[in-house]
Amino acid sequence: MMFDRETKRIAQAWRKSRIAARLLLRQEAGRITPRDAALGKILADDPAVTPRLIQQALDSFYARRRKLEYTRRTIT
Amino acid sequence: MPDVVNWNTPAGQLLDLLAQKLPPRPSLRITVFGSAPLQMLVKADFLSADVDILGEPDIAGFVERNNLGRRESELGFQVCGPLAFRTALHWEARAVSAERHGHTFVFPHPWDILTSKISRLEEKDLEAFRMVIRGTGHPTVVEFKQHLQLAVDLYRPKFDEEAGGDMFSNTKRLWRTIFGGSIDIRREIIVPALERRRREYERGDPKLKERLRNLAGPVSKKSRAHRSRVASRTQKRKN
Image 1: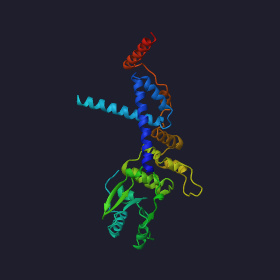
Image 2 (image 1 turned 60 degrees about the horizontal axis):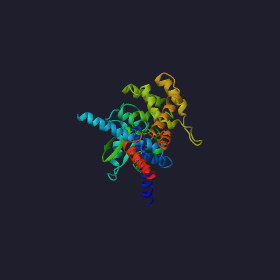
Image 3 (image 1 turned 90 degrees about the horizontal axis):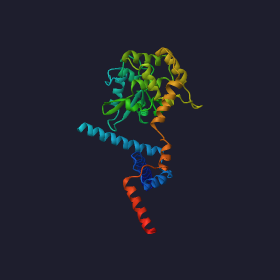
Image 4 (image 1 turned 30 degrees about the vertical axis):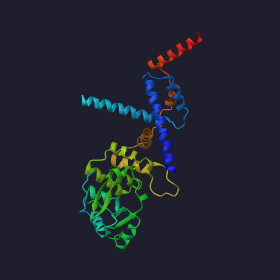
């Protein structure tokens, strides 16, 4: 169905952007491998991976990390 | 916002009568706007010339058949389409609703009612502002400025075919008359609203893709070990 195909396409863009965001986080942590760098180039050339989606993914990772930190603080 | 709807008012009694007369099924959802919600939520003796309602298309016929429309001396309904009530965005989230004889009546927040009155702003509309502020102590200048930022689209230029008052000059008049001061609409309403809209639909930093293209950093231990293994293997082959 047309709708399913469209949903799948959007989900793919979102998934690829999340991978891109993870690569940027790995760079921040100083854990980039040549394979990561090569993948980064491929994703940077992919029009479906937009700065807005990467930013959303980064925000979600940061929020998750903060939530985990908060939960840990609350528990201890 | 007062969350108790006073049905013991002229508008309340008329709405109650409508709810009684309507067939119990299907259950209808009717929005009440204009001055009637101010009468029912803020001040019972606030005058309302008619009761403006938005409802399903066939409700206009029902009102007419039951002689509940606008009459010369008595309070009656004016049934409008959804385009008639123009106010701040997201008004439905601030509205209160009350059930009467199986039907739901939705009353927009008094600030949303006041906002919808600015494009006309006759003397009775100014009186509505005075009454709400006297009765509740709100909205203050700051509160109403922020509220009007949610109604920023009302400040767009009108269509050629569109009648009605000018939001710019009416807002300035409102500020002079009610809040006792002047207002720079572009600087205090339009620019902050557009800024909020831009922030809320952030396009993302274009530098992120550039950073992604040029990923590089300290090589991890694992990768360093792998590289040295490859290098030593190559060296052995050469030897």
